Length: 297
Image (cartoon, rainbow, N blue to C red; front, side, top):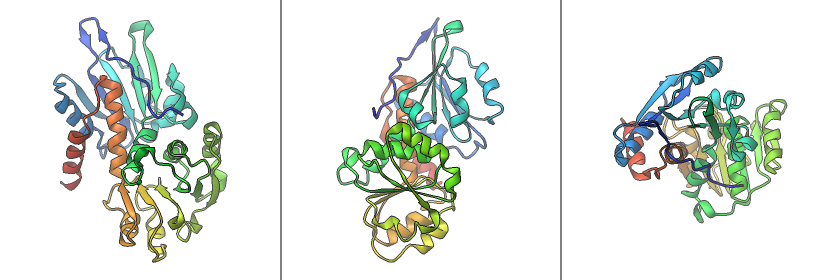
């Protein structure tokens, strides 16, 4: 499975360059995407580029898409739009298609020839962020892994773990009956997860090479309190980053485990989005500095 999303060129439309982008979701006021993308534009000298945050519900997404003109380069999507958007796209990149979630929309062509392309940079963000904690970096091979949760981010996590060599992760869920979508996505990826109850996670996850929590903020707090005192074997990535550190990350670190903050996944997926939308490599250091400043403010 290719780690990288497509590489569309920055298009000239008449005398105008595509130079507008936004993050969509509901609610959206908490989004850190504007901080990341605007820092990238400043570092790259893209003074005419604009990046906004727009509150859009699932019901309103189709109408919003119809308003996009030739000045738009792309969209970043957060919940609950990553799956809603699939029916509105002209083309979905293979990785996004197997994961079943799109967090990036690229606009190409104009007028009747306009094409909306869906991509997924969450997988890239997960692989790169985990690589910061793994001894072998993003090219490491992972033997065992545990995933907490069964939503869209969990599907991207399975794809990331597959790229890192783990095809049989254990997925801890509240309800096996509600994990059908995740299992279908796993089947498309060639990954064979083992489902277990989230109630059993505290006593088991410490033995895995990699643990990724995709649970909402505070949803893993009880699990954190129930972790045994032994040092965890592997790397933890909690995709939640508010509060920072999360209870799970703090408990893991207190046991001398390796922790990668969820903001690192957010950073790297945005770096890849910048590359796709602008055609320029995302300036990691400038974006990381802006993100850190925002988080400690």
